[in-house]
Length: 118
Image 1: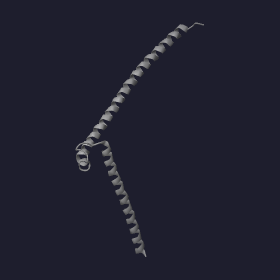
Image 2: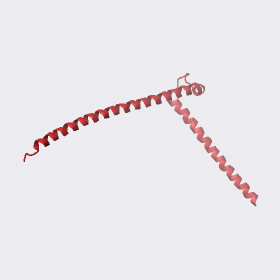
Image 3: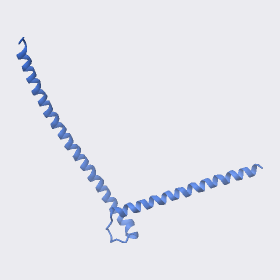
């Protein structure tokens, strides 16, 4: 009845401690990986904010001084986004007008060919 019981008990205890050690190592590796990912995320955010600040400084030196009532160099993100939206609306309007004239031109050419065939 007790045959192999002690050996099995030793095996179970060793397995328990081996699993415990593995869990500690995996936890440590996961914490290190999380720390590295957080650092990379912070670096990306810093890089983006640096690029945004560079863009703001370039934008403020060229466009905002002419059209913006604030003091020189005082540019907010909202004014930048408003001017970008305005430029995008102007581009979209220009595209709509261009498409309209292309359609008109195609219709006129069709009418001319139709009249020439008669």
